[in-house]
Length: 138
Image 1: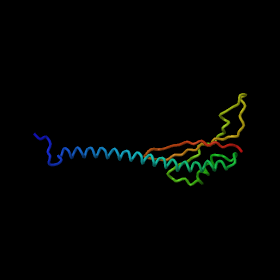
Image 2: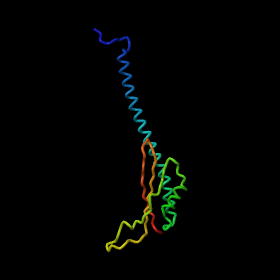
Image 3: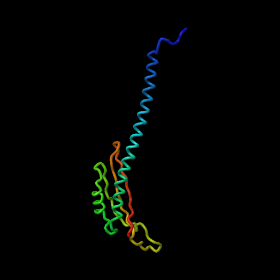
Image 4: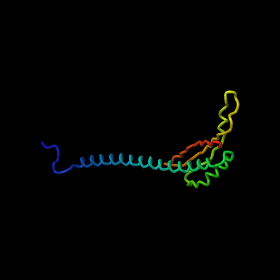
C-alpha cells in the first residue's frame, strides 16, 4: 500500500513549504529592520554629537566671565544645526555652589557647569539627551 503520491508534490506539501518560507522571510525582514533602525540611530547620534562637540569647543574659546545662557544660545544658533534637531542651553551655574570646604567657607568660583539639551524624533519616539559641559576659569 502506497502512502505518498510519487507523481509530484501534493497541495499539502506546497502549503507547508510556503508557510515555512513566509515565516523564515518574515523573521529575516524583522531582523533587517532592527539592524537598519539601530544603524540609523547610531548615525543620528554621531551627527548630533559632532554638533555638540563643536558647541563645547566654542564654549572653551570664550572667556569664563562671558559664559551666559544667552551667549551659549548664540553659539548654538551659529552652529547651523539641522532643523530636525533641537539644542538648547538649559542653564549655566557655578560648580562651587554645590560644595563648601570643611569650615563651611565657599569654594572659589573657578568652574561653571553649562547644561545643554538635545532633542529629536526618531521612529515616532522623542529622544532627549542632556549634556553637562564644565568650563574652567583660565
